Amino acid sequence: MSEIKLAVLKSAKEFGEKVDKELQKLNNTKKSYIIDMEEVRFSNGEGKVKLYSSIHGSDLYVIGDVDNHYISYKMYGHDHYMAPDEHYNDIKRTVATLDPYTDRTNVIMPLLYESRQHKRKGIESLDCAIALQELERMGVESIITFDTHDPGICNAIPKLEFDNFYPTNEILTDLIKNEKLSELLVISPDMGAMERARVYAEMLSSDVGIFYKRRDLSRVVNGKNPIIEHMYLGIDPIGKDILVVDDMIASGSSILEVASMLKEKKANNIYLIATFSLFTEGVEVFDKAYKEGLFTKLYTTNLTYVPEEIRPREWFKEVDISKYMALIINTLNKKEDINKLWEKKVLVKKK
Image (cartoon, rainbow, N blue to C red; front, side, top):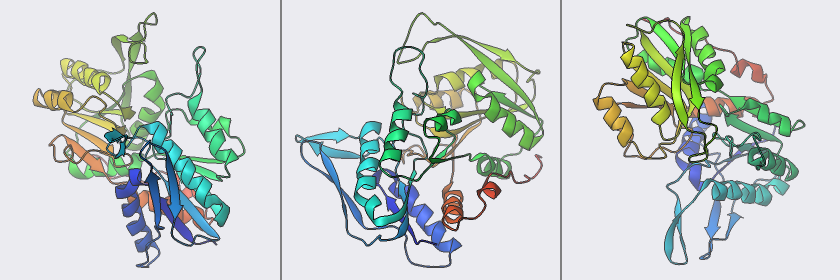
């Protein structure tokens, strides 16, 4: 069994340090697993990675958050905030630097790079597949991610280990611990999230409903066909506590529209659940919707960066996934049965 080493990029510093502490607890040690390395930027925006630790023969886990939009550097004298493409390139630089010295190199991208660009609907790029194949060619032996937009993307790398985990149990455990839930109904905000909603519903022994997004296929706005109408299919939500579950919140307009329609149907408390909350257009729309009583709370994870100023808000609850991530790393390192990490725990029955 090779020694675990963590290559934590700046983009995932806070999460990586929490994972490190959880690994220390699991293995009863006070020695950090994080290696000493540096991500260097030149003044024209080019970069490189330098290593200052010994990693020979290690089981290396490179952890990067491709959506951390608060990392900046000086380029031509101006502040420049890093985009997903740059974070992904830093992951590649790290792999290229460290892989020759390890027994095994694993890449942890909680939010999979370009996961929404996973299939063609016309003449367009297949960025996620290209990125995964690129990492495979560089010698990466496994990809670890969470709640990827389309798990079928693993077909792009059929010979490479691809583990797509879900934080469902961790989120529900926190939800049940903190909220007084009554009669529950789980809602999928669109057809693509239905399987996720079904899993939540089965774990809670509740009914499930779905909204169908009717889109204007003749236009593209911000890279998407605009939604014309949300059509609800399912049992009457009147008087029920609702869980609206999705993999990702970008601007939030779609999930808040669903919450508004459920309130019109006289639903009780509405809890929004998303593995990743990106808030691409800020949180003002959430502040407004919360004040108007459209939802009770948003439950999300720390798998991708959330600005510090958002965390104290009454409507926001961040679920820490670092312990689960440490358990995944430990299990893979010891070559134990990974299936035990997929098994759904028995949750406390809702109140």
